[in-house]
Image (cartoon, rainbow, N blue to C red):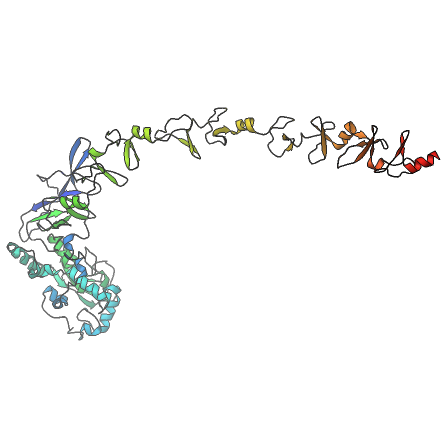
Amino acid sequence: MRLGSFSGFSEIAAIRGSSIQTTACLRASHTHDSLLDIFTISSFTRFARGSEKNVIAVFDELDPLPELASKNCTSCKCPREAHDVCHDEWVSVRARLGLKGDESRDPVGGFDPRDAGLAWAPPGLPLHKVEEYFSMLPELSVPRLGTAGERHRDRQLATQLPKQDLARAYCRHLDPQHSVSADDFMAARNEIALDIGSVQEVFEKGVECGACSEPLKYASLAVSASKLGLLYHPTCFRCSQCEELLVDLAYCVHDDALYCERHYAEQLKPRCAACDELIFSGEYTKAMNKDWHSGHFCCWQCDESLTGQRYVLRDEHPYCIKCYESVFANGCEECHKIIGIDSKDLSYKDKHWHEACFLCNKCRVSLVDKQFGSKVDKIYCGNCYDAQFASRCDGCGEIFRAGTKKMEYKTRQWHEKCFCCVVCKNAIGTKSFIPREQEIYCAGCYEDKFATRCVKCNKIITSGGVTYKNEPWHRDCFTCSHCNQSLAGQRFTSRDEKPYCADCFGELFAKRCTACTKPITGIGGTRFISFEDRHWHNDCFICAGCKTSLVGRGFITDAEDIICPECAKQKLS
């Protein structure tokens, strides 16, 4: 790649993902037998950083774009290939190339390809050999009438054999002063490069394919290129550049390689990316790694020429500065004016500002290259944002600075060092904790302060336990005050706020029956009878004589005994 220096270029500012370019007119003198000396265009870009402005020259080749405005229909913008570009008089490739003879009816095979349902067939072959030939090709390359193969052939004819390359009458943008150059180019091409291949059977052994160098099978069909004196597999007869099968076997030769006519011509002449015609002028435009007639490199929006002008690439299409700013430029959130391509566009969350308008909403200090925060569609410097909106620690009341580790629980938040136990002041970190009444406790301090303790041993009750008179006890600590037998799950009573099992309570504190001398415990609803400081179980309150129960009956005392009235009468009589 040769690099040429250019003067008089405008300084261009680089903006968001779009590149601004300047086209250069290239001039070179050439004779009919010399190639045009082409320079690679220079792209200049300015990068603005604060007040420092450096201009950097970047020499590179841009990636080619698939389609440009004038490569499409000017009415509907669809590609040219979508329209009917074939003419009835050019259905025959021989006629399209302007060669003598008519291949519409094969003089050797003796049939019209259209009678066999084909738009074209290799001449000189009988029908069964034609079918054999097409069986060796991909289905899309078989031009059967009314199929995708026929439409594919039509497109390939228009692509590989562009009519404007073949006849000056179809060159709409050829200046009269360059007509001789065009005629000389076409005549030289037709004489030394252009030809139509033929299909023949291979009757020699050891013949290699001119493309893949693999041997051709004996008695198989091959394509002959007489300009090179080589034979090819039918699927190897392709253009060296686009690698497409050569339509109707039409080919050109350049540097011992096969080309379709389009790419052969492009080896020798530049082609305008807009009108698709070869450029025979020594002056043309080079931009976006493509060649253009002077005046054909146009804005995608307004079609004004971009030659020698600044332009912006957007979605792989060029726009003049005016159209780009009117269609794509963003509006400033602060001043509501358009942010032009020569201005720096600062963006945040789909909002845009001029560099000079990117200010704190409160103190109006510039936020360029500074930390900032946003609230309710407004932007603030770090200090103003912290003062108004920053969250604060529930421990110390200070704000959370950038990069500070934050501990959160429900709706509250702390600095890591402030998230500590309210009693021992030790940082809790990732350890377990217990919240109580807006305070945080470590497990140890919470147990010490709030855990249930046994009334007897004063130790924490971790599980189970017994409650007696609203006081907690370990099960093992809840025992009879006299014999220390566990009372958990047992019947018990109390005296002087102390629990006793039934046996101990009876032995120690219960009244005793005058008859049996056993304690009257009263547990289980036991009923007893009292008389003159003496007590009896219900069952023991009987007549000392006849042993009849005196419960609910009258009785008479006889010294220490009690007797019924009948026994008293007998004793007195």
